[in-house]
Image (cartoon, rainbow, N blue to C red; front, side, top):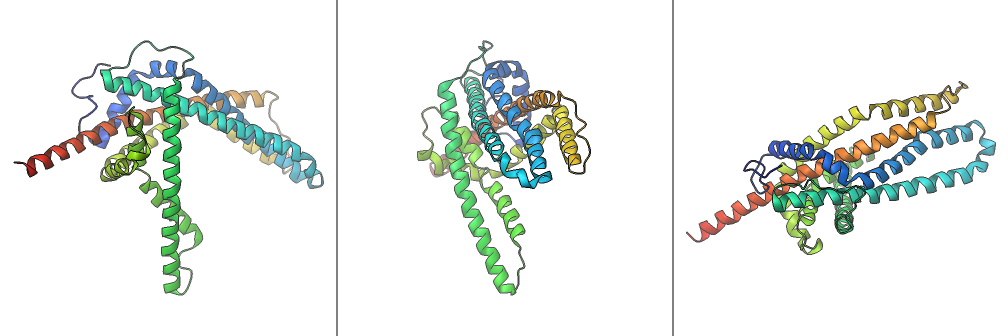
Length: 324
């Protein structure tokens, strides 16, 4: 995809334009992206399949067995521990594989930023250790900032709720409302982290923490662009992932209904190959979910370029105003 005036990175755009161009770049390079990320995406799909199969089949059946025969529940303790260890391992491995996929995605976007196109030659079974490590550091740092902001927002909302309840003389704001409001406020506050993370990934020589406050303040100034673009992309990618992963959803619901029926004495009624079928369906769902999340990176890419262009225009305007 050659770089034209319309898809040049550093150009002021609306959120809708960022989403449209991000989707166009993603779709025109989907085969290259799938080939470049095939190894980490396959590992993620397997880890996702293992975790989902445990949650959909193994844990429910073990719980039902323990509830039906509570006197023998302690005998299943080793089974619970084994499943928990496998599930935790799948989460760790899947998380690292997801980071590797995002690192490769940003490597491709950085190439597009530098040359105006994404190279055709992509190797199978390839993982960029440098980009994966940078993505891991950026994601971990962003997560730390998000947790800090979540704690601050939670304490602030809780303090306001306590004050309102004391002034009212009764519990006007319940705990559930406080938790829900804290979550909503946190989601709004952490939106600038999207710019921080993208800026860090697309600037090789930029360290995360020395530029954290400046990047956050820039992201906050362009909160509307980031929030609207993210909302549209997440909703769109989520709907696409659900529709394409419908077989996995159906298999998961079938397992849930069958396991619930066991509590009422009904036979399981599931074929012997249900575990294998569930594992395959969940692996496909995991791959689709990861590919849809990669789309978000493409939209962030153009949102980052738009913010940089707006900031440059602002700097130029201030310079011309101060020095006519």
